[in-house]
Amino acid sequence: MTGTIVDRVTTHDCRQAFAAELTALARADERIVAVCNDSVGSSNLVQFREEFPDRLINVGIAEQDLVGVAAGLANGGFIPIVSAAAPFLTGRALEQIKADVAYSNTHVVLCGQSPGLAYGELGPTHHSIEDLSWMRAVADLPVIVPADPAETRSALRWAVGTDGPSYLRIGRYPVPAVNPDDITFEPGRSIQLADGDDVTVIAAGTLVSRALVAAARLRTEGIGLRVINMASIEPLDTRAVLRAAEQTRGVVTAEEATVTGGLGAAVATLLAQRRPVPMRILGVPHAFAPTGSTTFLLDHFGLTADGIAAAARELAGDGPR
Amino acid sequence: MLTADPTQAERYRELRARVAGSGIAERAATLHQLGRDVRREDLAMIQRAGLGHIGSDFSVTDILVTLYGAVLSIDPTNPQAADRDRLILSKGHSAGALYAVLAQCGFFPRAELATFAAPLSALNGHPNRTKVPGVETNTGPLGHGFPVGVGVALAAKLRGSGSRTFVVLGDGELQEGSNWEAAMTASHYNLCDLTAVVDRNRLQQGARTEETKRLEPLADKWTSFGWDVRQVDGHDHAALLTAFEPSRTGRPVCVIANTTKGKGVSFMEDRVEWHHKVPSAEQAAAAFEELAR
Image 1 (cartoon, each protein chain N blue to C red):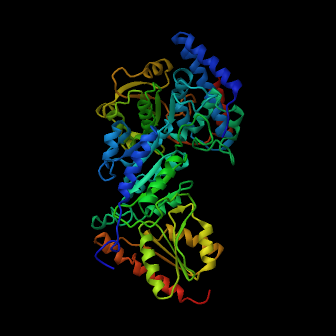
Image 2 (cartoon, rainbow over the protein chains, first blue to last red):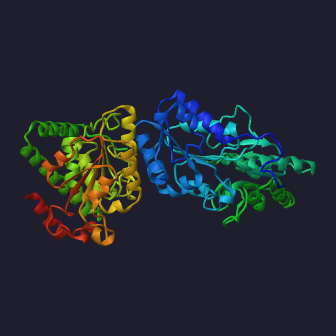
Image 3 (cartoon, rainbow over the protein chains, first blue to last red):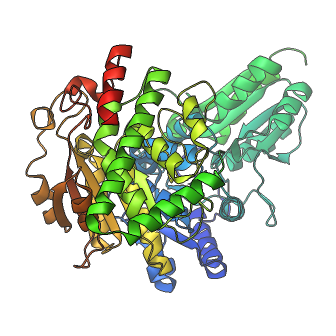
């Protein structure tokens, strides 16, 4: 699969959904402030700024300050929505996320924009593939990877409405709608988007639509691929994972992130201790990406419907249930 | 989460009233005595725990005592009051001094100080806001408290609250770049109700600041970042009180408090090894004696 980032279906922009939902929430709750690092444009915050000029805090290019100031705003009674490019937000300000936000238990919503390989040719400095490993390692910090605009909106509503910290990935490139429009995000709860009893794929974010394409292809081959959208990476929907291990031959995980510590690692940690089954963990291997567009890189790393289908076929042939 | 000690909080209210109602000399004398009490309490905690940062604690004690004893608008029985003044101890390793002061104010019972650094105590080696009332943010790694304080002051400005924010920084801590990001932000947003207090004892963990990484000309740095700079003797309560007066320039205020690490105990003063050395029984006895005079 080359040439397009997704199959030829209607796609939607999660960033626009994020910005629209944020503005709508801000109209209803004057405690909501947006905090950014010279990222008004890339975070689609122009509309927010027009409506609420005093409630857009721009600290300039200074991510440590960005997160610390947000924690202070929360201390002062506001609900700060931090919006910044995911690699810099989570990399540069990791200790602020740990100490000022998570350990201090402040109600700060951290929104990592353009995560994964979205910055393509800009290179590994701008890829945010480590964020899920880093954020998962921090205690008391929900890690959420919405798969489409409806889920982005719902996850943001949940994060704003829930006292305490959270990290949300906001996808950059358009994706198909995969969830029901009326989806309600809940931490620790996944959504089964396709039924199947042979193999399970647990995917997050941009890989969910690809998993659905893989399931459709495998169906024609007589392989039933269960597709689980695991937006809540921390806390994980452990019941759905254990059920999948019990009811299908193996589990494929798929994420636009390094395989060192994200969704695949979370699922593997659970299954290795509770119900070991054959697994394939799809993601970016422990290596810096070569030069290439997002589409090229996703193909390069097998983060495609074909890649998911191939992994599922291996597990389907991996012996009796 | 620890809870307030109403009896001690009442004593604290009486102290505040006494300080407010007295002349400057008597006011300074009362705060000086409070500083002695806090140092003795802190010394006992460190001796019991077998760890702590005694030199740093004694350096910052008079700054904390002046703020809590005469400046901050706070109610220890209502530590989450929306329009309270806030103090953030960015140099979180001075937790011992902060705990001793908070207990004097009645934020929690003084008996709790005996648990400092003991297993499962609320009083960790660095302060935790989820367990200790009066602590505004969890500090310890340096360069964290100041950006948070800028956010707190910005929130007060957005709310139209007149509440004040004080951030107490170590001087060595200023080698962390995040502080200068925060200094720019505070100045950009004209946060005149924010005061940064630099505990300028000229020593850091391993050596003198100027030998490690030069901070001077420190006042010029703050001035050039858009701050109203006041330099004082950080152990002179009367001078500190003047320095802590609100901004008259519309700019945020930086108080460079020239201090002595280990202040109050002759053999600890200005000695780099007392950053986090624990006194022996003999040294502790000698220190208690000096602090009793």
